[in-house]
Structures are given as structure tokens and as C-alpha cells.
Length: 449
Image 1 (tube, rainbow, N blue to C red):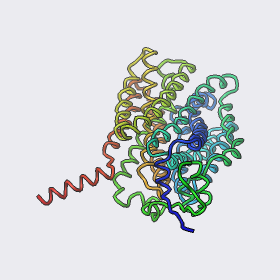
Image 2 (cartoon, rainbow, N blue to C red):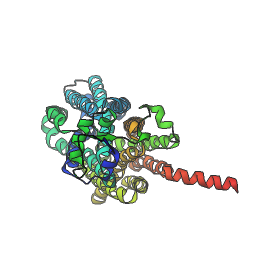
Image 3 (tube, rainbow, N blue to C red):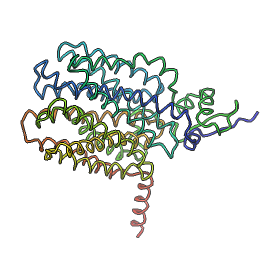
């Protein structure tokens, strides 16, 4: 019988949205919700840890950065590993790490124990992100790709909202430890996640697991005729590249790779400076702990709107102009936060700051996922994320240092807002293949003239 070869990427690109797509996005969203929660509890618990353990602002900032340091190494290692052993296996390993070790952090009795556990949990927090982005992106139809990836990533901001709400409800009665115990819930969901979360379809084809690929395609694209003789293939250019960092600098990608790294560094610096220190910044500006946690919740609600709204706009206008707009808006509203004392207007500014900073970061993940080819996709996302984590480490320490200097509030907020302006500039300089070809063609014409 005749073997029928079908390009699997073409099937995914042209598929209509089905319950299978909903299943992938929903499970990835649930995982990243707890991933976001695990990191957002830094902002909720830092003021309490400073009181319990007598920490200075700089010491607390360094403690907050231990998880971010772990995230840097986790993104580097697990991003590349997934391109070799599969997304699903790596996602499961990361859930065990970030959920189990965050839970264990509730038993820490001193800053050293706490810092070690947060670093180890950070390996899972940082490692799971690139793989959830890659998995969602690889299953999303082309017309909805940015929308579905950013919708999935909205779970990250919902996790931040959940942390702020649960912190205001439970920490007065149960202390900061309860926030870490709640983080253990995903461990009970591991068998269910393993059953319902699919492996990457492109990875199955790459491993020549044709029977599994045929089962997935029948659910993914019911209108595509699939028989036992159907063989799925990948575009030739997707296959030969090695899954390592060197590949990110080949085939004319070097400049864009460096610009993505700069954009991630500056955007994550702002995002984690805000996430870790917003309650404390507001307390320094004269607000109570309860009011400060409300500001954190408003910031994360703004993030959900920025992420989902940004994804919808990106599918319509492209990611680049949306990211540039969010970066410029973020720099402006964060600078204004230090000058505004009217509480209602301040809530609006905090809402917009969340939409700009966290929204930009999640759209950057989508941009990177769409830029790199399959063979190095997780590697590209992982290394961009890992370089970004250096900014995430610097952010809380920088703001802790500024708070320790007792500067006027507007200086602190301007310092937080400046990096997202640099993000917008870096994104503006990133060139697509079409733009690169046009520039080469214009240079060739100029040379001939």
C-alpha cells in the first residue's frame, strides 16, 4: 500500500480550534498558575520574613533572589534537555522540584535553609516555563498562536493574584509558612497531569513515533484524513540543527539572539523588582500591609489583562509593535507611581504597570517561541529566559539597596520603570527574516549603483 507523507507543522498551522487544543492550554495554564504562585509568594512573605528574622532590606532582596538564581540555571538546563528527551518528561520533573521544594520552604527555620530551598525550587520554576511555552506554541494553530500562548501564560499572573489574596486571608492567623504549604498541591495532581498532558507532536515525529502521532492528529485535526499508512514528517530545515546554545548564533540569528537576551534581562529586572518589592515599596510610601497586598493583587489583575489583550492584539498586528507600546507605557506609568498620592489613580497606575511589565514578559516568550525553529526552540526560550534571570536576580537586590538608602519614592519607581523602556528599544531592533532580506537587497542595489 502507498505511504502518504504529511508535513505535521502544516497540519498544526491550519487546524481549527478543537477540545484537544483547549485541553493542552488548560493543563499548561494550571501548571503555570502554581509556577506563578510559587514566585509571587516572595512579595507576600518578604515583609514578614524581615520581621521574623531581623533582615535588612538588602538581605531580604538577596534572599528573594535565591529562587531567581535557581530559575536561571533551571531555564538553561531544562530548556536544552527538553529538546533531547521531550517536553512532557521535563515538565513533570520541574513540577516535582518547584512544588515539593517550595512546600519544604515552609519548614525553614533560618535564612540559610530558606535560601537553599528557594534556589532548588527555582530550578523547577525556571525550567518549566520554556517548556510550557514551547508545548503550547507547537500545538497552537498559526492564526491563534500568540493568543493561545499568552492565554496560557495568564495563569502566571492569576497565580500572583491568588498569592496576594491568600496572603491577606491566611498569613495573619497562620504566619508566612502557610503560603509555602499551599504550594504542595500540584504534587497530588501529577498522575492526572501525566495522563492528560500530551507530549510535543513535533517531538514524536522527530523520534519517529508515528502511531502516537497519528492518534494525536486525529484529535487535533479531525478533518485531516489519517490512515495506518500515513507518515508525518517535519520540514527539512527543522531537523539537522543541534539543540545547544551555539545553534542560536548560526544562520544569521546572532544579533537577534543578543537582542532577545537584552529584552529578557531588562523586562525581567522590572517584573521581579515589582513582584518582590511592591508591597514593601507601598509600605515605605505610607500604606498599610493590607493595602500593600491589594496593590499587588491589582498589579496581577492588570497583568492578566495585559497578557491576554496583548496576545489578541499581537495576532492582529504582530508582536513587535505591541511589545514596543507596552514597554514605553510601562516606563511612563511606573515613573508616575512615585509622584501620585491619590489612591484611586495609584491603583490605575499599578494596574497599567502590571499589564506593561508582566504582559511584556509573557509576549516576549511567545515572540521567541515563534522566532526559533523546532530543533532549537526550547533551547532558544530557555537561554533567553536564563539570561533574563540575571536581570531578575539584580532587580530585587537593586530595589532593596535603594530602599536601604531612604531615597524619595519617585526615584525608586523611576529606577523600576527605566529597564522596560530599554526592552522596547531592544524589541524595535529585532529583525524578521523578511526585514533582513529587504536590508540585504537594498545594500546590494546600493553597491551596484
